Image (cartoon, rainbow, N blue to C red):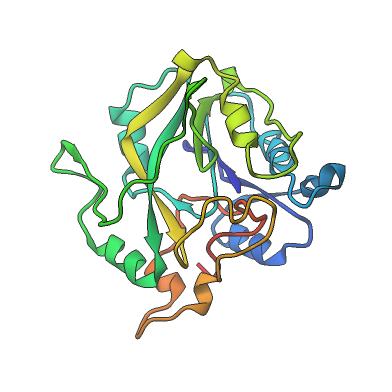
Length: 247
C-alpha cells in the first residue's frame, strides 16, 4: 500500500516498523517511509485505512494525491498523459482500469511492447489479458477502488478504518464524493503485477497468498531485471506487505 504524489513530491509509503525489507526497497527508490503501528489498530490484523491516514498526514495540503497498491505499476508515460492530455476536476476522485500481468514472462513481454499511449492518439492495453472488472454499485454507481484513487488535496477526506481490513474501506473512502464527482480515467491502464492467478479477496484479512516474485526465475532473467517498480511507490499492498519483492 502506498500514497503517491504524482507531481514532484516524493513518494510516501505507510509501512510497519518491523518490515525491514519494505524499508530497504523504499529507500532504494527514493520513497519516504512513514512507519506506523496503526496496521494493528483496534486489535485488527491489517487496519489498512488507519495506516493510509498516517501516510497522507505527511503530505502538504496542495496538489494532486494518488493512492496505489504496491502491486500496481503505472505505464511509462503516465505523468505526461495525465497532466498534459487529461482534464482533471479538483472536486472529483478518479479511478482507472487495470489488467493482470502474471509471472515474470508476462512482465518481460510488457516491457518490450509499444507504449500504452502511442501514435499520438491511441490508448491500448498492449496485453492479452482482459481488463479487470470496474466497481459499479447498483445503489451508488461507479466507485474508484483502492488500487488507484486520484484526488486533489483541496477535497481531502479521511480514510475510513472501522472495518480493520482491506475489504471495503477503499469503497467507503471513495463514496464520500458525490456520485457525479466519482469519475473514471480513460487515459491510463494500470499493470497489476502478480506471481500467480489472483483470487478476489485473497489478501483482505492480512494473509499473504501470492508467492514472492523474486523466488521465481526465468533463464537469464531475474525479477529486478524484468520489471522495475518505478513510479509505483513502495510499501504494502492489501496483505500488509509489498506485492513485488526484490525490484
